[in-house]
Image (cartoon, rainbow, N blue to C red; front, side):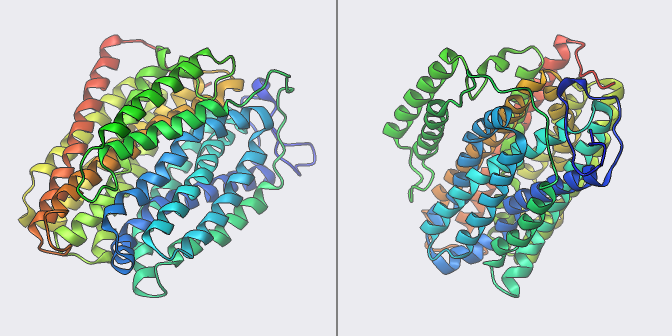
Length: 483
């Protein structure tokens, strides 16, 4: 709610009114959140069309998947830490630190001198991205009552969709004009504007208690476990061969992580929410959806450029239908959820995901870029239908003090699915690339690898559909109270 003078935006916890006025201060906060999320969202797609050029300059194609997976691992595993930190010290300082860190690491990425250095800087960038995404979404839930919150969630989804659409095209434009390093430098002025707008945001939080703690052990074990899992799957291996020792280490580290979190009085990752009647199945949906959402930009663009012989602009254009459909469907999905609940939306979205993945995998290469665009549109519809409703449902299922952690867990599972999906797709592609003398358009081995990697989309779509059928069959009758 706004202060009497309207100079700042504050939130008073659970006692917020049914509606708050749209003061200039509140509008600046919402604008800051959307700018921050735009920067984080555009950075996940702007790299996709530029990376073949970067790989051509630096070499090291075996590290291709790590440009995305390294970013996703750190942004994924630190999301719970940032969510917990925002519950303890407040959303504003965490978000400002996240945006500032994102700006600094973007400058480092622009200064990369090798493929390995870019992987390292992108991995550091993911640390800041986790803070931006998790905290921005939580603030949007804090500053507005439920009815107004749905509209802002739709706006945020639209912002992310626009960023996803513009990202590949901006990447292509920079590659052909002022150079690929500007795909990172563009973040600097946008991040500064977001921080400037956030300076007027003041939040009223429940008083801190002595028992407030951040469980760094859990975050460390989770980060090491996921990293070991990706290495064990063969990510970054020139021959795309599994590494049994790394897989064994991943199992041990993840088991240790679960034990630490379950025994902790103040866990950073609230694993207890997994058993929640509503939240648990929705987290599973997010895991499968993330495999598709994060796999489309890097491998959809690479498929067009290296498999179908298109240029960077064609690669960017083919991703647009997915982003546009996701943006439109997310707005419609939020409206439908208010009237019919989230269960049906999950089932409808899963059906679109499965259909789009099946069309993409079965479609022959001679159908070309147009057919790929149609398939991407179907996948975008599937994701857009249920992503905002799932977020709103999870947030509405917990109290204010756990909302940051619950939002972070939702993002964690989605990004974790993306990290695993991108890694597996990279291993599949690399297994074919390692048999070919070079990478280039018309290389049948490369095309086969990219085509077979789309099986990940199909498996994820079928798994989402099965989860949707399970949710519907349970007939929980539960949905968020948005009054």
